[in-house]
Amino acid sequence: MDRFSEIKGQEIILSHLQNALRTGGVSHAYILNGAKGSGRHMLARSFSAALLCENPQRIRQPQGDPEGADPQAADPQEGDRPAGHPSSDTPDAGSWYLEPCGECLSCIQAFSGSNPDIITVGHEKENSISVGEIRRMRADVQIRPYRAAHKVYIIPDAEKMTPAAQNALLKTLEEPPSYAVLLLLADGTAGFLPTILSRCVTLPLRPVAEKAVEEVLTDRFGADPMRARLCARFSGGSIGRAALLLQNEDFASLRDRTVAFLREITKKDAAEIAAFAREAAAEDQTQDLIDFILMWNRDLLVCRSTFHTENLIFTDEVQYIIEAARSVSWRGLQAASEAVSRARRRLASNVNAELTLQMMLLELRRAFRQ
Ligand SMILES: [Zn+2]
Image (cartoon, rainbow, N blue to C red; front, side, top):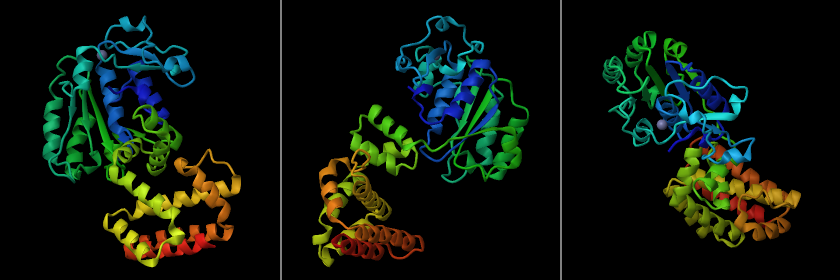
């Protein structure tokens, strides 16, 4: 079940939506703008469930009060509040979340994806939402909600609406029925007509801090800390991407192969280097391989310059990294960093991936021998 208190790193959006729930000042249309995996769907699900819940609960925010981290810590008095009448703002409103109760019929249906008043607008073509699809939605908007005071439409990939589809949507945005709430999930707003943007509240999702991503992976997914740190580092601030990496066996296997290779790189001959580069390029893992090497270099640099090991990424290789950091020269470390930067530049200008990797690994071997 999706709860606001489980959404990390989007405090501004949470506070905006929570305020709307508390005061009843919900807008008719929101654009949740963020990259794939940034948590737009989770936000949309939590918000629509809370909006339609028959018995929304006040849950203390986990931050700032450790006791409140327990989701069971609902305020019993608030539990009896009639549906559709959110509490008035209290002085400490900012430290509470209104959460869906998870037990009423509306919540049960919401969390099983079968709430008739929460409609997800699908699209047939992968790259566009057609005017016909929006027209069908518009016809449905005219029908009053089954049970709740609101009817929520979630439009994933909203940036894929054709201009004609956007114009059709505009008609609903101009005169929405009082119960309708539209949640447009978008990856970028550049493709929206200005008239759409001006009628929606745009909520930009921020990349989540690496530390917070790491915590979600360990706390919610039970990842071991080393793996969590690595996936968080690769996630670009997206919890969704981090979770995918966590479950991705290819990613884990590349990581292990790369570490094993780097540990022995000074002893590898040209044929072994070529074979390793060929395999990574063939499996379309060039970028991940380069990123692994970048982090490996970074660990060596951190260890060499600070003699601290608590912030290393490859925490299971601490002993080796300490020894390697002692033996490699500053010049060597610098040459290694330059080799990786050069490889990135070459790839960006579309030079053959296998050759680029091969050249980079040869340069690394030379660097680590210094
Ligand atoms: Zn409920």
